[in-house]
Structures are given as structure tokens and as C-alpha cells.
Image (cartoon, rainbow, N blue to C red; front, side):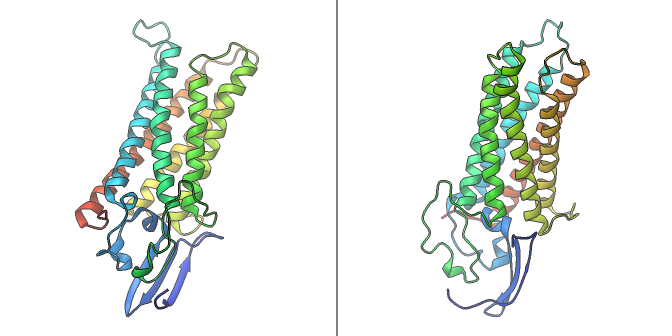
Length: 289
């Protein structure tokens, strides 16, 4: 390492460090975990003149947002179709709705992995720009358990895989309620729990603590609305449990309505991520190598 940071101040929800303020060669600099792994606001670290790998470019971040938005739209379409009156002639069948959900799960998994790949290859904190990227190979999964961004994206990716199983099994759903819970409800519940864990880890990464209120900050707005979507998904999954006997009709309606709201939150978060990436491109903050 070339040189040492002076006046280093750190912050973050224990045991994580997500914010560092320091001076280096006479410059007051700022390091933030989320911006570091996404290659955003590089001027804060004095890195605006450095080339970055493609996975930390504004284009890569914009693509992640676009793919997430496609998956969210398909989930909104599936949940909306599930709320249509059963007797309506234009209403799609249960199998058709299940196919829509499965198609939506594929972009979710794709974007989830793209985001995790980005986190797996994010450089650790190094005060000197010349040290960034030295001796680092390309990791497909990585292992950074002390990094909330890595943990968040990994949990999210595994959650999306669980939704792949959940939605695929629903296309040809078994008739027995026990098998439906094992094949469909179980993976969906696991995916929702992992989404909630992922959403909160992303939230504390931006808050630099367990809680913060920063509605004027775009990154805080993105992670907050995604966390709200995770809550909606979890409650929807809880209601989707198949009981051994007939259940009140309002329960599946409420489950699908909450699923639609959760997908809407994810869609808004994805669009805001695209906006954040476009802003970075305009400022030249993350030009790919």
C-alpha cells in the first residue's frame, strides 16, 4: 500500500464498516461501501480519472436495473391476472399465470447474479487509487462475509433461485395440499425470507447504521423501496400457505395483491437504479476500461 490514510473515521452497523472519511496526500476523501462496489461517485475517492472494469460501469448498473424491471413487470402481470374474476372469459388460466411468474423469475435470477458478480469483484478499501485492483482475479461467487453488499447480493441471488423452483413447480401443481406446500409454498417462503435478509443488509449498507431517514438521497430511496417490496413479498408468501381444508376467499386475494405491491416496489427500485446509473454516466463517474 502506498501511503497511509490520516484522520480515518469509520461508521457502519456492527460488525460492518460501510463509511470511511479520511485524508490522503492532503485530500479529504470519502469511501462508501455501496458506491465502491458499484463504481459510483468516484470523485469522492479521487478516482474519477481511473478506468474501471465493465462490471463497475454505469452501463452495467443500468443493465441490472433494466433486467430487474422486466422481471418485476412480469410478476406484476402475473399477480394482476390472478386478481381477475375467475368467471371472466378473458381471464388467463392458472397454468398460464404460473408460466408468467416463471418467466418473471428468470430475469430476477439473471439480474441477481449480475449484481452479485459485481459485489464479488468489488475492491476492498484501499486509500491510494494506484492500489485498486492490484492482485485481484475475477471471482464468480467470491467470499466476503464481512461485506454487507456481498452478503446482500448473495442472499438475493439464492432467493431468486428459490423463486425459480417455486414458480416452475406451480406450472404443474400437485393436487395434494401437502405436496403443494413442499414444492411451491416452501421454496417461495425461503425465497421471501432471503429477499428480506438481502433487503435489510442493503439498507444498513446505505444507512451506515441499523436505521436512517434520508429520503433526499437516491441510494437510500432505492434500498428503502426495495426493502418495502421484500416485506410485501414475505407477507404474501405467508398467506400463500395451502391449508388442508378450504380457506376464506380473501386470503388468496390478499396474497396476490401484496405480491403485486411487492413487484411494484421492485419495479420502482429498478427504474431508480437505472436513473442513478444514467446520472453517473452523465458525470463521467464510471467509465468502463
